Image 1 (cartoon, rainbow, N blue to C red):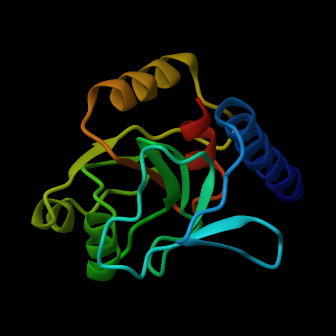
Image 2 (cartoon, helix red, strand yellow):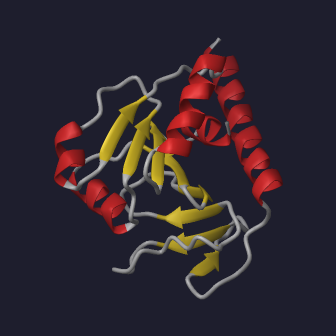
Length: 166
């Protein structure tokens, strides 16, 4: 059963990324990007300036040091893994993120979020799909809340890409 669940999660991740690429187009090169060994475009977050560019084509994998599997999927949305510790929240702040949406079941770190001026919204869902009411809540949150928005689950591989694709 665990192997089946993992295969389903991998499928959801691939579908989310394919949907993002199909809907948002391919990434074009710029001075702050590189191509990694898998051929994916990446953007480095080492710079002290915000690297998020509203006119870029998405998705763009971010070389984030403290945000696992971070992918800039839309001008307003980044998908990734749970920000853990001070350095991760500093990185979110440096990226210009204003709102964090957790789709993970774990309690968010509200203290660090507040310290860095981030609004935290908790909209958890499971690995078995996103119920329609939650899809509507996610869409409303992305539409109405200040961005950029960082949507995360635990590892940033399954639930957050699925949530970002909705």
